Image 1 (cartoon, one colour):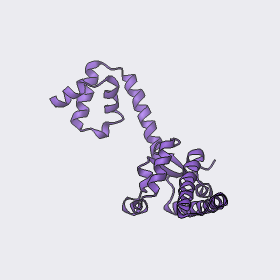
Image 2: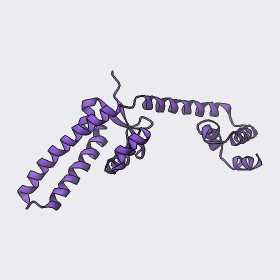
Image 3: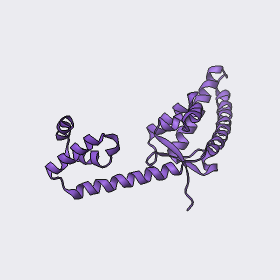
Image 4: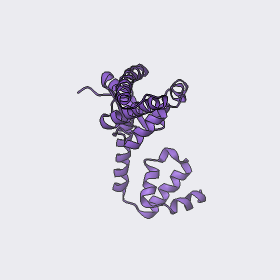
Length: 192
């Protein structure tokens, strides 16, 4: 207990409040008790603690709502099929344009494929949070907390899709690798 008491005495007021509210499940009961005693010792305003507790509960509620609104694997398959068709069409259009300007080569086709694949996903998911497949299934990409993903989330998501383990991961733990590691999720759009 003394070790925890020493550690908690070095924490800021806000860190202590977060430990006893938002992060309480991440700590051992003895550590939580030490943090509570340090809060009492410092006479931290209970209203400040309540405010942070409410904020934590609101965040938890949003996360739970997002989690419960996750789209089905069937929708994900439909999204993938539609998106691959769209990317195929995009590749054809770009190939025609490029071949009218340059002599077609394998490298040029590979470049066209890379630009089409990555450009499609990054542009569509960053700009609209949806691809054509997601428009069709009425789903969209969000961060775990329900916010719009940042550009880095979408870029990471797109690159992680290319790893063969991605689809296998779903059958292992029920989650796609590119969702989990980019901290994004595909949810159903709410009916309004």
